[in-house]
Length: 252
Image (cartoon, rainbow, N blue to C red):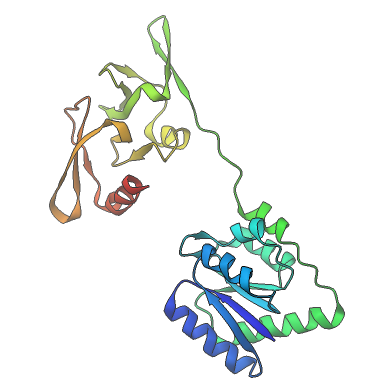
C-alpha cells in the first residue's frame, strides 16, 4: 500500500509516519507534502497513491482546494480538528477522520475500515459533498447603512464610514469626513454586518476601518494604541485579547 501524507507540522508528520509503520508494516510512504502547492507539484510527477492521510489545514491554506485542482480517486483519511457539525460529512463521504492528537488505535480503526470498504467494494469517494458541507457559502455584508436624524433619513455607503463606536450607551457611526450620526444597531450586531477584511472590533467601544488608521504605537502588555482619522476623543487601545488578531488583520 502506497500512502501519501499531507501534513504541515513536522512533529505531527513524524508521529503519523511512526503510527502508520506500526499499524501497516508493509505500507510504503511514497511522499509527503506540507502545502497545497507542494501537493499539486507532487501529483504532477507521481501516480495516484493507494491512500492519502490529509490534514485539513496546510501551510498555505485549506486542503479542500486540492479537490478543485486534482481529480483524487483514491481513499482519503482526514486528520482534523474541525468541530463536530462537519464530522458527519467526513464519516459518510471519506474513509474516516482522525481528530488530533492521533494515537495508534485511531490509525488502526481507520485502516480496518478502509480494508472493510475495499473488500465489500462499497466505498465511493464523494469529496464534493464534503466541500459543500465544510466550505461556508459566501456571506453577504452590508454595503450601506440607513441613518435617521429626526425626520431625515440618510443613506451611508460603507466606503464612506471610518469607524463605529459606542458612547454613553449609545451607538454612532463616524464618516471619513468626520461627521457623526447615531445608528440603530449595537456593535455586536454591526460586527456581523460588516466585512471583517475591512473592519475590526479592537475593543468594546470601537469597530474601526483599515482606512481610518492614521498611526499605531506599541503600548504596555503587547497592546497597541491606534490613532484614528478622523480623530476620536475616546480610548482606542486594542484590547489585550485582541492584539494578535489585530496584527493578523493588518497583514491580510
